[in-house]
Image 1 (spheres, one colour):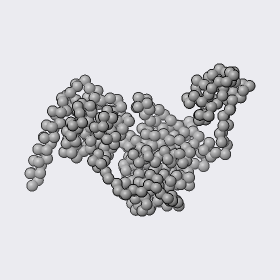
Image 2 (cartoon, rainbow, N blue to C red):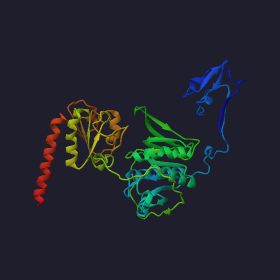
Image 3 (cartoon, helix red, strand yellow):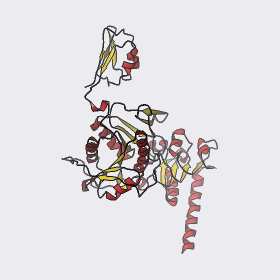
Image 4 (tube, one colour):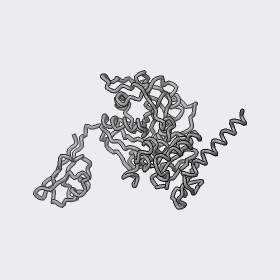
Length: 404
């Protein structure tokens, strides 16, 4: 076990270590520093002490100190009803870039039922090898079974880096896997890069409600784990000529499983995922009240798109969290993004930066959203949306008549 101690003869009671400790784990007694039980062995005090009075001993038998036995980049493939989620292909493209820097291979962990075709698709998108477990028990995304099997595979194949999509399922199982592997986890990343000096994975994510961006590294533990937001990375085109291996690792399914999935029921907002939609109609505080949200729903329905919302709308309970767009919600990249009554806070704009075409409707002509929009309409959404829906329905009806 790692340990930290104070060399009493060298300590002068300057309190530099106390001020530097982010956990308040150091106190002074008889003008000497003392380490409390809430110490996390972060090492901040060691760097702060100018007198060499703090000694930190690391367990030399812990493989995680060097990671010499760990290599390769691994992506966890997420599938639902037999379909690979788009974020998996986005992660594969980034994994390929990182692998070039580290001169290593890219593996994918694929759990599911009847997964052979999916495994071939993953190879076409950049995987060198697919570590597949094909079993009827994996048909549903069971949050008790999946982390256990993934942990077993990681221990067998020892990847240096593990990337998981920051979806609802990924966010749920990633902490369980990290805990089982006794390693760190950076959640909800928006940027990944390899540090040229150390070879460490630098993981960047929003912090303090999206007001700051933090870059985090995991120097002592392996694998280095990160969950990554969908749509912040771009997937590579599939290449059917690529060759790779499909490996079926030996795993032991957990016994006495307490969680059993009887039925999966999708809410209306989940039927068209806002992160995957080509058209997103999003609501902001300019919609006035929850009753007016039906105007956004109607426009999304006639366009065949998904309904999005700002954080303020979700906090009020007018929309579900799964619909939230922005730095603390989902990142979207639709062909058309229609912002209805959205002022355009920087946190929201960060979530729509990859949108191909932005249409903004707002009665405030100075709203920041107009600076990011391709088309701006100054006016009241409550008046404009009904007319827009009416016009679109007429266009659809006329096309049907012509076709008939």
